[in-house]
Structures are given as structure tokens and as C-alpha cells.
Length: 435
Image 1 (cartoon, rainbow, N blue to C red):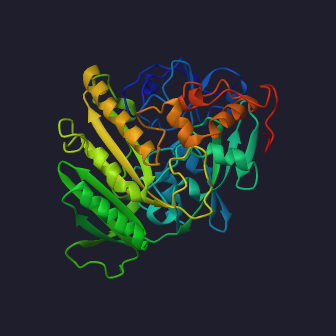
Image 2: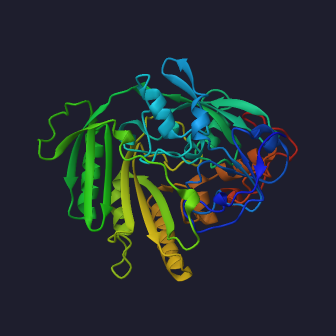
Image 3: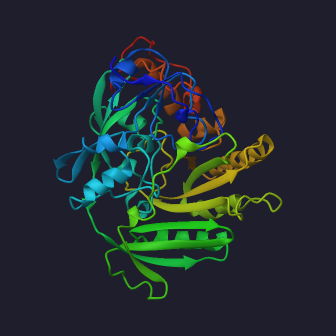
């Protein structure tokens, strides 16, 4: 094996910084051979840029780091008709720059662009453009997936459709996403933005519901921090549809690129504050009660200090969108994503108390018919997982066995929650559509 194998303490934690373990061996793309590593049978943890918060990419065993933002850009291929084949180790920032130079753009981007393409798609991905165009996984035409014997297959709506449905949003539980074919749109440099202030979270909920009902915005996001609550509604092009005047409107140039700078997750020290982040997606009609839960009890407010930020998005998916097994959006056609980003001191008492708040928010999200992003803090219990994912939990266990993935990402809560293997012996190979 010609991969670079060495131990690096820079990978001993993730963006959250709560969990730590130094990997015994680090394999890094592009030098590593991912097919050989997955096919070796040795325990292996997959990691993109490490932008998770609950130890999903932290291990004291072997680690495969796929994030290679500089070299990956050289491997982008223009397939024509607006389709581009992208290495999963590329960053969204690099891909968007590449596309913009060619008059194209990604329809939906996260607000932080220095994350890996494959890692984000393994969670779901959402952004300001989700108000019109859904999740980032909804922009995927097909993926190349490596299984536990090192075999590679292309998956799409029509080819290995079940693996396509489980891999996107599935946290790397059914294999490593190696390459992705993305749909793009024409690049419009200008975005007409309307900013509004809101006195309360209830007023923000009303604004979100109104924008969702109107359905004519091209981008939308809202934030709350340090007692201030505001939202931004945007339309592509210099001329907005007459929604605002010069006092509350601006025209942004290359909006996705503004303020996008690389993070420094590898410089975290043990005594640094812990990033306890989580995102919850509920049907838009349940936006108000979810925001009320976020406001929290008066004696333990989570929102209201400079170290905690609320971030909200509207997510509108097409009626024929793929029902991804574990992505954070359920069957509701329009949902609201609510992110809670807390930065707390690393002492055990504070972390435990904050964690309890997040657990309560997770339960409330499930009660309201919503789903969590699986990158964040807070773990589903088995009953809530069954309520959200049903038979897909058992099917995940079956797929992992048939794809020989019992040694990959075994520590993930989603893997632990997956039910006992039924209907197929572990030695049987994967077959599309098998029961």
C-alpha cells in the first residue's frame, strides 16, 4: 500500500472539541488508496473536514481523511448539460470558485464553504438557497460509492437506487462516497437582499411562515444572537421584485463567497471552549413551537448570550425529491431548519447541563414530526429512532452486512441503533432490491 501512514495529533478531535483520541494511523487522500483501505477488513473511521461535534470522526484506531481541497479541484470534470463530476474530498469553496470561472454555480451552498463535499452530503446539507431548491443532496445526480471489500459502484435514482437513498445523509454507514456528479445552474453574481429585524422569536416564526407561504424568494436565512433577531430575504439579480426600498436593501456580489474563510479546527487545544452545535428540521407549520422550545425556560435560557447563535433556514423540496433514509428532512414539502450553535466552557458540569438542553430539544423536534442533523450533539434513543426511521434501521444493518462494512464507522450511533440483521446471512453479497 502506497498510502501515507503516520500518526497526527491534529486529528485527535473534531470541530466540537469535546471528544479526543489520537488515531494510531492516519491515511490521507490523495496518497491513500481508499478501495484498498476499505477492503482490508481492518477497523476504519472515515473523516472529511471533521466539521462534526459529537466525536463521529474521532478514533484511536485507523483514520481515513478524505479532505483534500487543493488537489481535488484538479480532478473536477465538466460532463456537459450543467453536470460536473467532483471528488468528494474537494471543498465547497474550491468547487464554487471553479464553477464561477466557467459561468456556473451550485444551487445550494452552506454558509461555511470550507467543508468537504462528501462529508456534507453524508449529512444532508442546507443553505440560504434551500428556500427554493431543497437540500444539497437534492442537487446530486449520482455518486460513486466504495463498499467494504473495496468494490466501487455508481449509484443514482435509477442505478443502485437503494444505496443512493441510504448513502446521502447516511454518515458513511453504507460506504465511502468517492466522487459526486452535481447539477449546477447559471452563475448570477448579484443578489438583491432585504433585511428585517424581529422583536421576538415568535415574530421571527411568523416571518418564516409568511416567506414560506409566498414561495417567491431565492434565498432566506435568519439569525438570533446577543438579544438581536433578524432575517434576510433575497432574490437573484440586481433588481428585486419591489419588496423594499434603499434603507433596508442591498445588492450583494458573489454572496456565497462573502466572509468564507478556512477554519482552524486543527489548532484546538484541550482547554478551548467546546462547540456544542445541533440542527433540527421540523415542518414549517411547527416552526413556532420549535422556536419556543429553543428559547428555553427562563432559568436556563440558551439563546441570549454572545456565545450562542440561532440560525434558521427554510427548506422547500420538490414533490419528487428522493426520500433519503436518514437525511434531516421528512415528508413535509416545506420545512424549517433551526440550528443552535453554543460555545461553552469545557468543564464537565457546564457541558453536561448544556447537553441536557440539547437532549430536550431533540425530543421536542421528534415530537413535532421533525428530524435532527446527525452531525451534532444529542443522541436519539431507540424508540425515537424507530419513530423517525422505521424499517430503514433494520435495512441499514442488512446493507452493512452484505456490503462487508462491519469494520467501517462502527462507533456511530446510527450503526448502534440499527436493528438486528434479518432476512439475509451476513455472508450474502449485496443485491439491489433484495428483501
